[in-house]
Image (cartoon, rainbow, N blue to C red; front, side):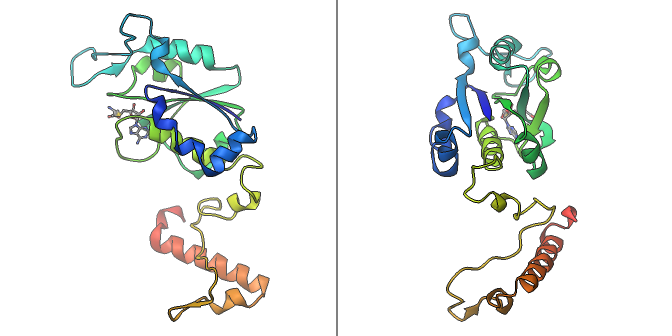
Length: 221
Ligand SMILES: C[S@@+](CC[C@H](N)C(=O)[O-])C[C@H]1O[C@@H](n2cnc3c(N)ncnc32)[C@H](O)[C@@H]1O
């Protein structure tokens, strides 16, 4: 998968996407990631990317011209252009699965008060929010989307079934898991998990997933 990111803060991306599973996915050529500075597409002396909102009000808005120019130069015919914005539809596991099938993503990170509306209406294919709160800019949301999508690409996780049996993949939270020792400070692992009876274990896990979801996230049921 190819992902192009448009941001005012490329340095924020160094680190989180250079570690662990995402790093290995990049090295293996499963993820081709490029980070682009939005100011490189502004052509005045100060490389201006923002301006005051028409009609007044606080803060500054991202101007349309640099974003249109950048996206038009980066996006291939099959690219999906996604804005990160608190007004977008909420990003969830189903959306991550949907985006993992796309060949080319262009992720556009906002700043200040956000985007000129013409960017939303005429350039973006989609607008995603990572939750009902407001961050200073879209770099962290972009990284959240990249991380969640990349781990779903075939071959990225050591065992692709890891992404099948986890929270949200079947609409439920994940069942409780335990590892050695079987007893720690008097706390015992449920007997069924030590039984070797795979049918009983699968049944227990399904019940626990349902129970945990009904207790913590009844909205998912
Ligand atoms: C300060 S926010 C702008 C908030 C905007 N004035 C509003 O009320 O919706 C600046 C940028 O951060 C990013 N951002 C902030 N919170 C976000 C969230 N929950 N999900 C996705 N992007 C977010 C967006 O790219 C946004 O354009």
